[in-house]
Every structure is written in structure tokens, then in C-alpha cells.
Figure (cartoon, rainbow, N blue to C red):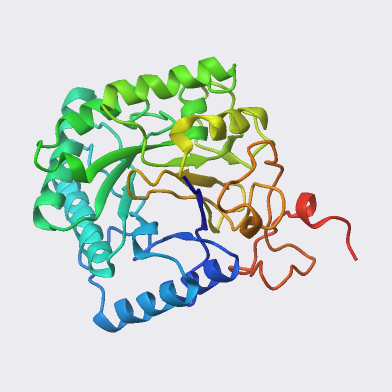
Length: 345
């Protein structure tokens, strides 16, 4: 089963430009924002002409719409006990699913939020209630995928049990459109030692699969600036954090990563970078910082079968020019690509 390799490129000139950048980078999958991620987006719709431009750009880039995921706004907190904030978060999640469905894309990925009120069981039910409301209001094939968290403060989703509890609260008739994904930095920071050994890593994945009743629908592949159990959501380039390089090779050998897509994207803060993969047996969900590839060489050479033994570093826009096939996705970021570009010329 082929792995689909993608990128979350910058969208300063719009999501259509982001799709074209991904296509020029040889991507076969893509992640975007449909609205500014630091706002709720609960009142924002998407214009038909914007939909058409984006679909045309996807066709030009040879990226299938079902291989595109939208990352929901970071400010959404569907776990909160504050009814006013919960209602706005629910509305924001519903509107995000509405925009994504209008675009004809594969899935929405979102963070569950913080369990204010300190009752975590009740918080899981609130997240499920928001998911249910969005899925009921917006019919169609687009899926809603919850992401695990690093466990800082009151954030939900740090354990397999919490992810399972959230999904258990989604009614059976809507459950096929719901799912989850795992971020490796979040796993490690939350205390799941995916770097101890291949067996230990498999046990972590098994735990989540058992609790949720299904395998993860995506992975965010990020190293961690924080130590094991630090609860710090601080991403590092693969091989440059406390997880190290080898655990990512183990992960790519796990059968649950067959048919995965990998993605990268630029964010405004160069300290937070991540890469993702997702399987084709579910819909998409991924999010990452800065445009970088974490495998050796041109991804188009291994897009169907990325070498699990060749994860080496990152690619992006730094002080030296990149080939045209590696387009810059923004300005102002200092992006390291030395491992892949070789010496300056």
C-alpha cells in the first residue's frame, strides 16, 4: 500500500497557492487552514469562487481532495465547562466541518481542549457532544479526528483512555465519521515512552487502538524538545530531540503506518516544527510546523515507499537558495536544510 507524502505549506496568498506549492514539492497530500487558526471562525463561511479556485489548484497539483485535511483553530476548547466558551467552540468546530465539506476534503483534525472544572469524564463527554453536534449538522463523508495532547495543565486527550472516552461518546450512527490521531511529541511528553524499544512503542499504539476500538487515522511525526513525561508541547526536528531518530524508523515499520501520508507546514514561530503521516484506511488529519521533509532525498523518488531507514533531517528555506521543486512558503523564518542540501555552493 502506497504512502502518500504531503506538506502543510504557507497560505499567505491563499489556500490555492498552498496547494500549488505542495504540488511543486512533489506532494500527494496536503493540510491547510480554512480560516485564521487563532480565531474561532464560528461565523466564517467559504465563498463558492474560493472553492472552485482551490479545487482547480488541487487538480493542477494532482492531489486528490480526499487526501487533504483541514486543521481546526487552536483556540477551540470543546472540553471546557464554561458554557459560553463551549458553545462558541462547538460552533467553530461545526463551521470548520462545514467549510471543509464544501471544499470536498477528507477530514478535520482538532485539539480537544482543556477540562476546566476538573471533571475529566465530564470533559470527555463535552468533546463528544461537540463532535456529535458538528457531524449531525454537516452530513457528508468528511471525518472529524481528535488529536492526542501532551497533557499540559488540564488538556484532554493525553491518555488512551481519554481518547477512547471521547470517541465512545459519539453515537453509533456517526462513529464511522469520527476517529483520532497520534502526535509523537505529544505521546512522549505525556509519558508514553515510544523511544524505549520497538516493543514498547508497539505497546503504546496497541493501548490506544484497544481503547478507541480502531487504529489511529494519522500520525504527527515530531521529535520532542521536552523530556519524557514533561508535558511540554514543544516540537523538535526528527532526530534532534529527546525521542531520537531510531524510534521513527520503528514507527514506519509498524503495519499501522502502511498507506500513510507525511506532511510539513510553516508556522510563525520557528521553535515549533513537526512532520506527519496518516493512513489511507481512514481519512486525513495532520499538522506540522515549517515546510520541511524528514526523509532523505527528493520525496517523489520514494513517495510510494518511503525508506524507513533514511529519516535524516529537514528541508526548508534558509539563507541559501533551494531548487525550484522546494518552494519557500513564507518569509522571516530561518529554516535549516543543511542535512539534505549538502555544502553551500
